[in-house]
Amino acid sequence: MKILIANDDGYLAPGLAALVKACEGLGELDVVAPEQNASGTSNSLTLSRPLSVFTAANGFRYINGTPSDCVHLALTGLLPTRPDLVVSGINNGANMGDDTLYSGTVAAAMEGYLFGIPAIAFSQVNKGWAELDAASRVARRVIEQVLRHPPSTRPWLLNVNIPNRADADRLPVQITRLGRRHASEPVIRQTSPRGDTMYWIGPAGDAREAGEGTDFHATANGHVSITPLQVDLTDHATLPAWRDWVGTSAS
Image 1 (cartoon, rainbow, N blue to C red):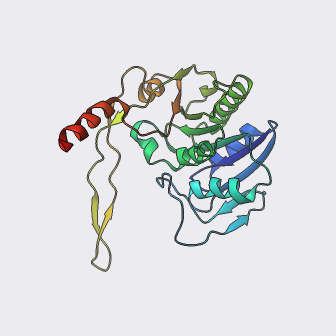
Image 2 (cartoon, helix red, strand yellow):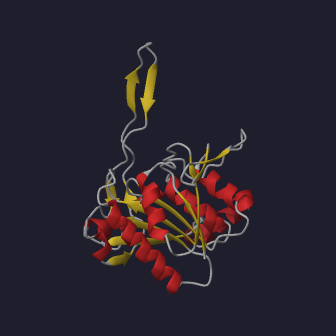
């Protein structure tokens, strides 16, 4: 078993060390992570400049790029053989609902999935790394179970969110769908010491679809949330209406 481990909080993040600990003994581990915190970078690849690869004292490799860069480089040039699994995290904060579209943690796992490799993204619900050891045990349990009993013969992509609790490894697991958030709060406008106007992206909106079956509901009620993800963004339900629209507009 060969496992590639990445994240978006950077190679020095406690969550990355916790995920490596969770994977110890499962096989050959390779860690390739961003040099700096790259939260919110989604699936972006760096195409406008070359990337550099460095090796830390603990053997982790880190790249001056995005989480997707890290996995992409690992799979296309750094690793001598293809890994059997890609894992990403443990992220400092939740990746639920619409957040998954922006998440570098999810993007790192998705990059592996795009190459046909099963992949899992792990996040803690609250920021601050509280009860990280318990989250590491949850990650170990999920990885062992999914390797022992794969849900499909095809590659799969899982998004796991873990409550920050000391008993997280004893919480029930719930298979969920993504919830939805309200629109983000307005940007925050500030003035620099030189008098220039600066803007900070506002906080994420509150959950607006957080009913039973969603990742928001599961974690709020003391469950570990596991959401299977896909990359196909096609709105299949409206395809017939759009085809009719093309026929109507052409006539």
